[in-house]
Image (tube, rainbow, N blue to C red; front, side, top):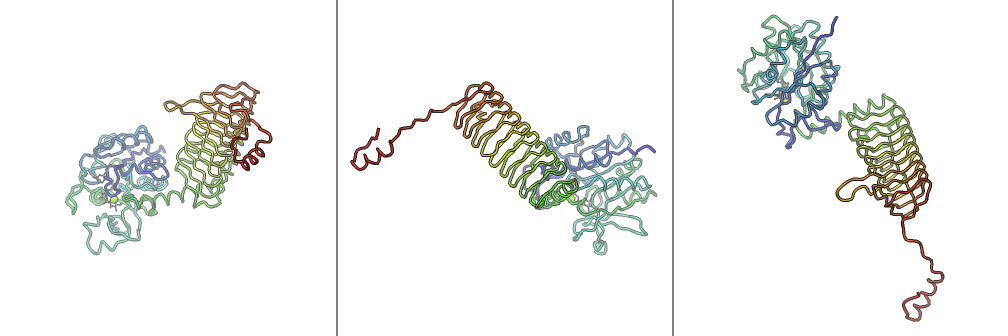
Length: 451
Ligand code: UD1
Ligand code: MG
């Protein structure tokens, strides 16, 4: 049997007024990825090779984000917000191309899982024309109620239109829907707006399907799958649920976390097995950690690659483009950006390594600064393999330190240093023997300069 084709229609035309933010609601992040991105990845994971994102007016940033995550996604614009069915019909061109399955999902429901979407698709494969995600929230106020008769879903009644008896129903519409592509357009085109809100309700597809002799089913799903985000408080709640999922997945993959509830992950964090993460570590976007590496407490990582068996922190900051090789070490109060610390290289204390390369086995002493910025442009620093940079040195880029070279502590290095040489860039020490005792005896006589 050939796989059924699937089009996802992602409704993202909602406003963000209750978020009290200038950012469109669906661009708010959880796990450092916009809500929309989570939904697009879920539909792709459920086998939707095609996708249309329905956006509101002035939503260019939403269009850009859709293209980033799902490059072939079509864009449809809904200029007036006339209801969920009206929004789906904005994707008419795509619907007319003919698909077996149409998935309708909301872009503000980021915890939807591919497996849940696949269950809705399976209901279509089993003969339903409409499959609706049903769930039983603690408080059903505001949701559409699923009206079931003789095990058949016969209608969805929106809260505003429901009778007192219907409002007693606990099983609610999660909002997600799968429609048989052969009937979808005909059903959608028949939906009217004679209801309390004068909106074209997608949910009316159920009763219309039934009238056409087709059948509709409800598929029960977890509340988290259909949890919508309308406020910053709900955004935070959803973030916390996502974090639980990400931590669980990391633990299942063999990562050791001593206090998982204190570790913050991004949706794209990649942790190999036998990575150890101490309490209170933050992973921003784009971090990969190879097997056996240890991330000590209070470290903050974004856009970084940590090699096998490497050690980070405590209190380390890795910014985008930081790459650590096998067994490399980056200790407390060290910041690294757009730089490579090759295999076995170390920077154990209080340093800034920006725009450069530290060769294998090299040692960067405490307090070393890569002076990469001259006020206008950034420049590179190269430290050769096995080199030793003494404590409190300033390496003024662009500058190259050869393999195996030594830099005396406290040096300001402005010129290249050849391999295996010693460079000193500081005032030579002067010793005046007896000076201190002369000072003390002068004090007794009232004179000033011990000479
Ligand atoms: C909808 C369902 C309701 C369900 C609830 C679950 C309908 C008619 N009702 O109600 O049964 O219990 O979700 O959360 O579908 N949108 C547009 N354009 C529009 C209208 C809406 O893009 O013209 C988008 C919104 O941005 C949102 C989604 O569709 O992402 C749902 O719209 P919303 O107004 O939140 O519907 P609810 O009243 O919550
Ligand atoms: Mg809603």
